[in-house]
Every structure is written in C-alpha cells, then in structure tokens.
Amino acid sequence: MDPSNATWVIIAVCLAYLLVILCVGLWSGRGVSRSVAGYVAADRSMHGVLLYFVIGAAVYSSFAFLGAPGWAYSRGAAAFYVLAFSAIGVIPLYFLGPRARRLGERHGFITQAEMLGWRFDSRLLQGLLALVSVAVFVPYLTLQMKGAGLILETLSDGIIPLWVGAFLTYGVVVTYVWVSGVMGVGWTNAVMGVLMMSTAWFLGLYFPITLYGGVGPMFEQLAASGRETMLTAPGLDVLGRPWNWWEFSSWILVSAAGFSCWPHIFMKCFAAPSDRHLRLTVVMYPTFQFMMVPLLFVGFAAVLAYPGVTPADSIVPFMLTQAGLPVFVVGLAAVGVLAASMSTGDTLLHAAASIGIRDGLQALGLRPQRDATERWLMRLTVLGIAAVSYYFAISSQVSIVALLAGAYGGVAQLLPPLLAAFYWPRAGGPAVVCGLVGGIAANTFFLLNPDLRPLPLHEGIYGLVVNASLLVLLSLMANPARRAASTHHQ
Amino acid sequence: MALSRHRVLRLVAAVLLCGAVLAFVWPLHALASHFHPLFLGVPFSLAWIVIGQVTVFLGLLLMFLGED
Image (cartoon, rainbow over all chains, first blue to last red):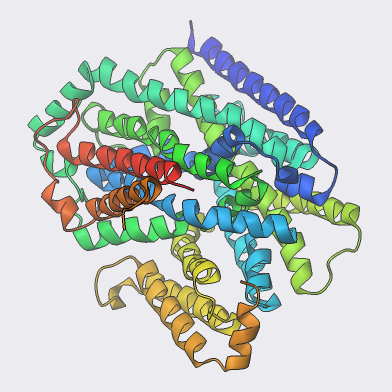
C-alpha cells in the first residue's frame, strides 16, 4: 500500500471511531431524568462498571500515551513514579468517597465544593474552590485538545490540520456532553477505556517483540549498552543525570495526595448508587492502571532503536510516522491517543460547567430557582468553556504544560480540607480557607523559586505543611461558639 | 477479647496498604532498586513497583471484604 492510501486509511479509521463515539454518547443519556441531578450525577444511579471506566479513563489523559513513554525514553525509571502514585493515590477515595456519597444523597450535593462549603459553613470556600477548579480545568482541557489535534495532524500528513482535528474531536465531545451529561461521559468512557487498554497492551508488546525479540531481551540489551542506571529507580533527571530520592519520593507522595482530590474525579462519588458500588469500583481500579506498564515499554523500546529524538514527548508520534509500521498499528495507536484525550476532556468539560454554575452561582447567591434553568446554564457553560479552551489550543503560545505542572501541587492542597471535613469535627471554615490559600501560595512560591527550597522536595510538600499547620492552629484557636457551629453538621 | 473476622481482615488490609506506600518511597524503595534479578523479563526495580500495585489491589480487596 503506498503512503497516500495508508494515510487515507488512518483518517478513515479515526473518523469511524469518532462516529461510533458520537452515537454511543447520544444514545446513553436516555435512561436518566432531565434534571440537574440527572445531568451531573446520573440520578445517583451510575453502576460499578461505568464508574470504573469514568474514573479510570478520566485519570489517564493523552499524557499516558505521549508523556509517559517520553519520560521512559528520556528519564528511564523516573517514569516509575507514575505507576507508584496512581497505585496509592486511589486509597483515600476508598475511605472518603462513601462518606461523601452519603452526604450527597442526604443533602442533594453534586459537587465537592458544594459539600465542603456546607460542611464548613463557608460560601467563600465554595466560591474559591469553584474558581480554582475552573482555572485549573481550562489549561488541562486545552492540553487534551492540542494532543488530539496534533496526533491527527501528524498521522494524516497534515491533511487534517491541528485546528480541524481539535474541532472535530471536541465537536463530538461537546455534542454528547451537551445532550447526555454524565451518562454520555460514562458510556463513551467505557468504550474508550477498553480501546485505551487494548491499544496500550498491544503497542507495549508489539515494539519490544518486533525490535528486540521480547520484553526481557529488550531490557537485557539496554543494560548491556551501559544504561543500567536508567533502569533502576529513581532514574534520571531532565538533564540525563541520576535523579535523587528526595524528589522521586516527594513527587509520588504529592501526586498521590492530589489524585483522589481532583474535583472532576471526586464528584463522581455522588453518582454512585451505594457505598458498596463505590468501594468495589475503587477496589477494581488498580486493574485499569496496569496499562501504564506496557506504555512505559514503548518508551524503553525506543531508547536503542531511535536515539536522539527531541522533544522526548514526541517519541510515540515519531515511532508511528518514521518507523514504517503497518497501517493498522498506526491506526490503532491514533485511536488510542484520541480515546485517552477525549475520555479526560469530556469529564473535565462536564465537571467545569457543573462546578462553575452550581458552586460559582451559589457562592454569589445567584443560584437559579428553577432546575431546568440551572441545567440549561450548565449546558451553555459547556459550550463556553469548550470555546475558550479551543481558542487557547489553536492560538495561544502560553506554556500550558508549565501551568499544569503547578496545578498538581495545588490540587494536593485539597486533601487536608477533605480529611478535616470527615475526621476532625473541630476544623472550622476560616481555618480551612486560610490553610488552602496559604498552601496554594507556598506551592506556587516554591514552584516559581525552586532554588529557595530548603530541601529538593516537590513544592506541593511545602504547600501541604503550610496548609495543614494553618488549618490545625487556626481551628484550635477559634472561639467555642464557632467550633460548635462548625461541628453541628457531623 | 477475640478479634472478629472483619477486624482481622481490615487490620491485614491496613498493614498491606501502609506497606505499599512505604515500599514506593525512600528508604524501602532504595533497597529494591536493582536491575537484577529480572522478574518476568523486567528489571527488579520495575517489578517492585508492579508488586506494590498488586499489594494495593489486595489491600483494598481485603478492606472491602472486611466491611461490616
């Protein structure tokens, strides 16, 4: 098959995939009510299989297919931190999730900010969380759009430019999120999750076997080439020197602390029909994350076969376009990357609109009286946030990756308030707000001034220390009347 | 007072989960950070992480089975 025919086959595969996803997304919203609870929390009836895929596919974005192999390619075992933090990051959700779900069922909560705002009697906290969530989601969503546009542009030999690719993929996403809400997200993520796992395992075994004769021989040849250092933790830093245990360990802990706290992940607890369903979903979740292992194999396979590719994140597109692979392998990889981008993007879009309207307007005292009005406002916000993110994806030169890197440490700052909400009745609203602001400020300060860190730890650790200290000290200092007010919710 | 079956399961689960967290970071992780022996073809350092993932899965499963 000549190259032009191969390109058209790849384009046809991608378009067919988008059509299937659109049909699944439009079909899936029929079983829930046309209320806000139906649109945002699936009437609290989302069963375990859908929850499993919603949470799993939402976590693994286009970074899983592009960034993680790039890390393995350039930094070796440093990429193991991704496996480690996602394994332990889910543990808090097992304990916090069912408690949040019960509160949601009792009081009608559909977002994390709404629950925390109620628990701590603080509209300021609710508004602050809404603002931070939307501010973090937009660059995250922009990154997903760019990833989808770039992979289509690269694999179509420029026939589908980035702006058309991003428009096509996210046109599909906006349509099914608009029509079907969280059920659209759920069912499409189930399809995309299966595609992602299949693609990851296929590529992760295909490259080592075709290039080296197997996974074992690949690692043996890597070690024989004098690269043993990059095959053992903590791997290499960005300059290719041995990384240190301080940063490796603290990156794992901060990322794990933030994992369960992401608002778009946490709010799915409100969609679970029972504690048992939610707990079972969390128990099964590690089976989803095993797909990251073969994706790291892809990066390791490229070290000897394709040396010197920069930037490292482009190693997967490079392998797909330059290595003379069979067209079905390229088509499968394209669908896998699109699925990873879209399955995160749809959850972000849906969560940003839900949180922005429910929490943003409630904090301002402007929440609509009619349920239907609120639902329409959420849908319009889906469109607005998608438009803003699309604008940044096709025109902005701002370093979104840099913005996002800071966001992870920031999201980890939500863990102390969540723990305090459920396990420390004495914690008060003003203390939580001060802790959160202090934690985010410390995180941002050390992110911008890494040389001022006393120890080479992830900046999120410093944020967590400031955050937890302020929360505890100010709660202990609060007057008894305020403490009584803050504990009556328990 | 004898521990009930549920409490024993939850206790074992807590030990497994705490152990997995500690195993991923320094200093425990440093003890296992070697290329040899290869485990199912992968370096022992990577196998250590995968074993940790399996431990978390087992820990959560036992915690689930130990719920009243």
